[in-house]
Image 1 (cartoon, rainbow, N blue to C red):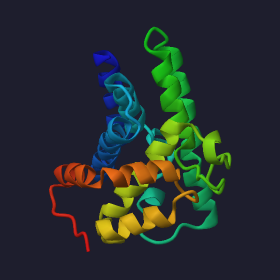
Image 2 (image 1 turned 180 degrees about the horizontal axis):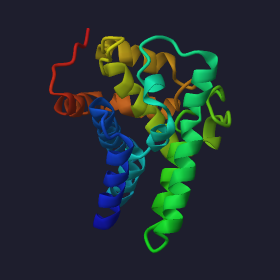
Image 3 (image 1 turned 90 degrees about the horizontal axis):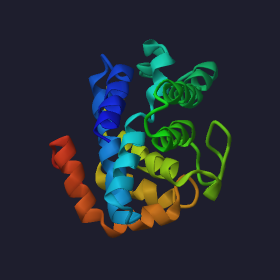
Image 4 (image 1 turned 120 degrees about the vertical axis):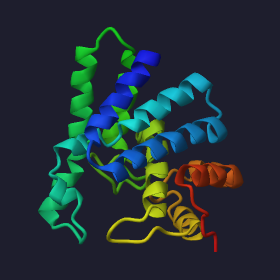
Length: 211
């Protein structure tokens, strides 16, 4: 597992090179995914580690997207939005090729990472992309990464927007239950809300505004 950890960390580093905010984002998403695996799904430590590694490379396909589009401060044009959405397919394809090149390593982990890369923007109601999967059609690991990816994106400030308070994020999670997110994951996370907020604060080094 050590060699796989180093490999996946290297993939994430290369994919996010020159984008320090993105680099921190994928690491936080991996950390939060591990937390959900441990505290909500009650998975084994080994399964939680695999989930975290898959989450670490969920956005690897964005390496193909021009930086000027990813950094655009305003709304994307329809063609630009469609191009950005292709990062899910690019990421899956890149991980398929890496699995072929490293065929002696854990193929199951690569398959999990491919699922997460491809499906982490699918929505529970079927209104996501790239395939419009819904409900349990979406792999569970991808549902987890989608949830924590949105949480971190909402909490994190960007050049074009301030970070939201936890109260705002929590409200969005509740409103998105069984629409955007797997409602059972949201419910489970909110049952361990205090422990999760401690983790978030440790990752962001700031006091969350909760009201």
